[in-house]
Length: 581
Image (cartoon, rainbow, N blue to C red):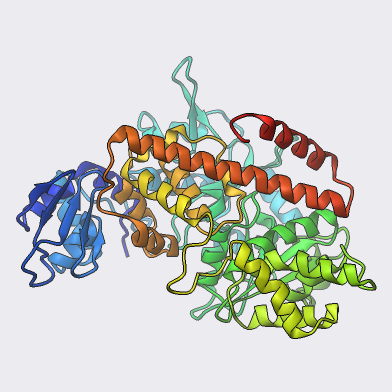
């Protein structure tokens, strides 16, 4: 079945004006910065239907509906998603491109077409390049598995792929396949002399590539750059192929580190492995995984680096393990990765190791116990203190109860004393769980919510935000949505709120955005910019202070690593600055 490229939808929304689309169906009158009218969805007597030109969205307060021009046509004209897109395309005077079968002629109507063409080119090149074939054979890979993953080869040439696009290079540049020399304007291939692994989205569309060098390149593996279609922190290699292996939900998905780990496991019949793309596991990764399974197994090396990576994955997983979801941790023998281990012991033995993987609660408490002396009262009390911030990030449920029960056993505290210790901190600190109805927002929640509301009003303010990484480190609910919104508008400086909402369609963060997005911020532009800057600076100060406190607490427990010492010194200098005190 043919599909409409996501890039085209984003471009289409930038071409049309929602006020004109809605105004052709609803009588609208100007109301400040917005337009208002009677709701087309209810039989109301007074207007509660608003259209925002700045956000390119509609808001109906009598029915609770809101969204982009696409949503409006779907609701008002009772059209399907595709029909609504076609109606807007007709209004904009453009053709709707489709991604179809292999027999279709190459017509580059967007970056997705360029990526599909590149995949075909790379696969054809692999057939005639014996060194690449020999490399894959040496690794133990068969032709059927290479075909399953669409593995190909990028020739050792500066412009072999560029020549395929001839003068039509715009979409290939956008897709991250080519680069342009600013001095000469000439374009050249990003990938050269590499075995190529297509990275697909959940619909099976190629959105990027990973390439393994066949030379002595210091960069053994190279990923496509971040593009409007591809974000390392939001995509997983092998997820589409894993989902295709089963018509039902998968019993589990295993997260590994490398392309060849995924491919070799599949070659041995283990079709439910995925790989992160040179980055740590993120909340978006977990959201993707839990749409296809209830159990995620992280597979890491058993050394110190592997355990550190597993701990970072655990921290991301804590808010996500609820309603039957489960995370487990598998550590490999020394000197092995999944690729080599499955070839040595076979698929059945490997599956046996997966079944023995450590539970999240065992890994969490096992690592925390290493930091304390359970033989002393102070050590047991400190275990509660170490566990508390992790419990605060978890939702109420069976897993959290299991961890609290085990804490009760380890600390020899009565349940009432333990609950008092945990509850006392929870009242004073930010909890990762939603506040009960009627309570005030958690500390720090309002500046995040307000900053996001202001940003949606004027997305161009994202260009002035610096130190986004510092904000992302805050353990504050909602900060990840604000950070991703900032990054989206930084990467897409001409996009508006409607395009961000469309990008997050059918995702939890899209629903969160819908809950906080407002009709109008009653401030002039200068006041909005100042309030936004103040909110970001407030959050940054909290993030810096929070990180300093974390490092100081670590310093009381153990000697800091050189990198941690340098980071603490840098933060201390920042805190001495008048802007942060």
